[in-house]
Length: 263
Length: 320
Ligand SMILES: Cc1cc2nc3c(=O)[nH]c(=O)nc-3n(C[C@H](O)[C@H](O)[C@H](O)COP(=O)(O)OP(=O)(O)OC[C@H]3O[C@@H](n4cnc5c(N)ncnc54)[C@H](O)[C@@H]3O)c2cc1C
Image 1: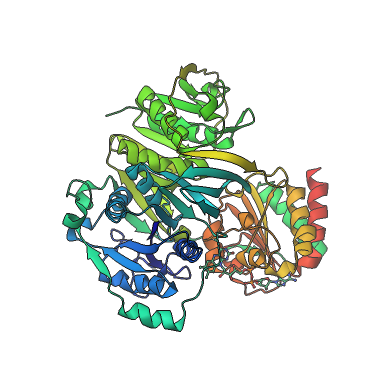
Image 2: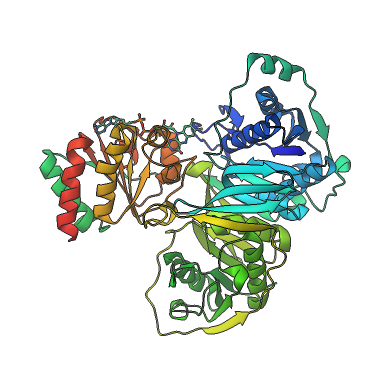
């Protein structure tokens, strides 16, 4: 069984977001890039399945230009077998559905049986693409998974169902699974693998390779348009309560009740 | 081109969730006279949805709709969109809707925006604002397909009081299609608490509670006294003081309560990302320089081990 892991490069979560051009999104000048944290769980799970003899190959799939290659190398250094970058001038400006069409086409062309991805990306927080891939391929999906078992052609996945509850879900491959924190503890790359990853070729595929057309992907096909970027509204300055503990606790309850009116 | 709004009304055990009323209030405001309908999956009747602005309530029932599955939910939502002819679909950003809507979007070719926090009328349609980068930035989203799909963060809009209206109930016969997955077991959480993402009040503890016992004797009783849901920083979760389902932040839950009390939490950027939209933030921290005070409405600089028990007692007395 071949596993396709969907990978996205995102700003590291400690990034201080700045906006220079409100029509263009955040400024990327001082950004430190990482693999989306949820995708790391997906990569780790794929590697464990291969080590357990349940998968034959771990293929990384990402949509992006040359700037994202280092993230593929980071994931190759964790132990993935192959990396593929999906890049074409016609892909630029795709919305989540467009990105999903690109990834679904690549997964299909590669004969992938299991797609693993993160439950959401730490930049747009959309949580859409992997599930859209499942729909486009007509496959089962289970989202926000914290435990996964594969037995032959079937899977069993534990998904959050709200308020700390979990559903245990069964189905048959091919399928898409999205990873939540808790699925596993991602490994660090070994020095040997880092050296090997530097030498590995990264395959690049475009529109024609994937049999996609301009009406399906890119800015012209995008149904979702974003603009008007801004920082969150500043919170008004708060108040530090004074006095001894008993007095401050009394005052806090009083202001929550009478001033803020929240209790 | 469709017309009007469809609200996904979630319920549990016979009661509609607060989000149903929040979304109906917003839909009525934006619809400006266009029809507002609601869909109820796996539950009977319209309840008081009519009194909150729905003129039609579509119900979808049957064995496939008793417990969430993406295939059944997508089929039900698609049927309700067709039957209502709605141009805008509003659903609470629950785990279930966030699981079903991407499939729905791909199936019907409708643009979808996740976890929006504002909606306004513009040029005959609707535009949304939504947080990105875990709330460190906001953008405006416009959807260009005939049907626009939105999941909306709970507590984004106030509900309105009921009026005398009533709704026509239309039972839809929906074929759930071939199930691709099957729920074989459901593991219930311990206790009967409101999910963090929907909670109106949250009390969170950090690394400084020192132990699971510290969390259970300081944070949980304070939360209970307030009728609040307990939350935690990642440091507290990673140390094993409480489960990951209680983590607030960029890699935990993004919450939007009316009242958020942070106890012994420093206010790292990833934690702030999960809670900075809370309406009132209270922090208790012994370090006057802790970044959490920068977003707090009220702060107490002091030792949580002394303050928490006092505050718990004071709240119990005040709320009795
Ligand atoms: C990729 C990534 C994702 C992350 N995601 C999250 C996330 O989702 N959520 C999250 O919370 N963090 C997240 N973090 C971690 C984050 O950076 C912080 O490490 C974490 O939030 C710190 O938790 P804390 O405030 O409990 O602990 P600390 O930062 O150690 O703060 C403890 C605080 O307690 C105070 N204190 C100590 N003793 C007392 C006392 N007796 N009385 C009163 N105050 C006291 C101290 O003054 C201090 O301010 C993430 C980090 C990374 C790298």
